[in-house]
Length: 458
Image (cartoon, one colour):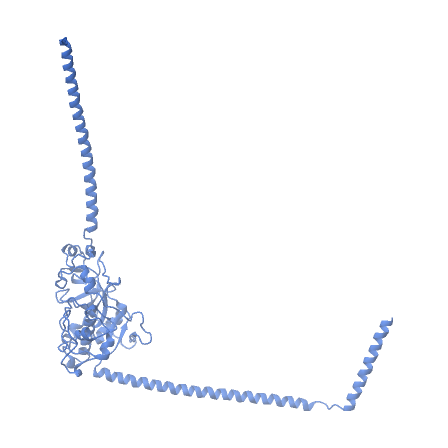
């Protein structure tokens, strides 16, 4: 076999070097291109991740008023939620009462209080509106008033209801106790009537599952309440409906009504007769209220019950005042002394209290019974007088009717007499004259008939 020329071998080597260089260049180009695409995708991915993170933070970050608590799993005492509450008039802090409570616990732990008669006020057999006494009870009211200071022996420590929706019973018993004491401080000093009796014994309420803040008064008026020592408060611990106390120790409410007037009417009722019961709507920032004048902050969330309606909580209204130009109601709550201002709170006018449906009771004191007896006596006299006046009026009406009938009859008789006189004054008719007239008329008729015949012939 002939050998290849030497020159051809060198050419092949050069060609091989060129191909090798080209392959390396191609690989470097592909590497740079791939790296460029990777960097591009990395930038785009980072941008998307940052955007999603920002959206997530915007949704979950606490807003003014602590709206992050809207999650049912969020703790009531969540630190970030409390720190997010910004208000110049009140401060927020963790509450021992709500320790380890979630927002879902509030929904089911405090639900069940209702206003059963709100749609029936003033109707027959339903709760009535309080009488307007503005024309009788006059006089200037103080700019601020605290019934605890005016009647210090008529109040005790606030209740801690625990995991028991019993504010309807606590507020009613507390209000009535203070009203007995204020009505007769010597006889009823330091009185505390038992809310546990309502929780354990009132079959129309639901115990720790709630009850009617307005309808509970029917039980108290019918059955009465024992003092606290006879049926001690047990809260969520189930207590039987029994006591060793004598029945004579019970105290009742004579009546109750809805106070639906304005601020002045509410103040005057508290000033003259003592605390009243008010329904209050719950907001998440109210649960961590610590001091100052509360009003819902921007972004605060109301609590709704299992029925989808706002949760109602009953409190006792003790007075009023003004701080930094903000008027407020002073209330006693049932969440223990660690909540709010030692268990009390100042709540701004026209915010969470239902001011148009405050509940007023009348304690059944001896004086009240005497007043009721006088009122019944006056009512009986009024009815008797009204009955007498109706009888006299009916007699006058009958007399007038008889008089008119007599006058009418006399007029008719007089008219009949006049007709008879007209007949008597007429000229007598002669029978002969009557016959002559008839004969004359017959002749005229005969003549007329003859004329008609003559006309026909022509």
